[in-house]
Length: 143
Image (cartoon, rainbow, N blue to C red):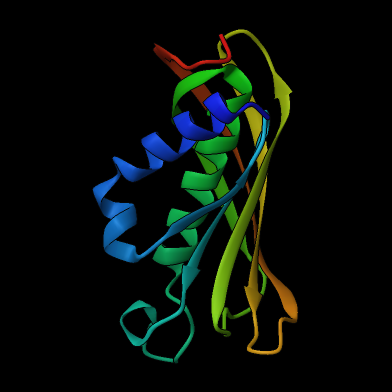
């Protein structure tokens, strides 16, 4: 992955007010993948003490869009996605890892896994998502 594409990804992420509001961090990125993580804190929990499904949904949506956008070489939007919640999300951190599986000139079909990470570093799969990401017009450094 070029430094230019990494800088582009971080510039896009840094321009997202909602990501900042949640305290999300962009992790590893590549030509067709992205990782986003959020530290779990009380404000992100639902009434049973699990990470709220809306937080997991945000992570899936944003990671899918980043993976698809990087695969498409620029700015992108989510056309659709589906999420399956597999287990209650508990832990210190939630990590979303997405990858573009199939890319055409205008769209990418992407898949994302969401894991919680415990204090001792153990990961547990809590959700899986799949989505279609479309090019939004502005091309990044890869195009």
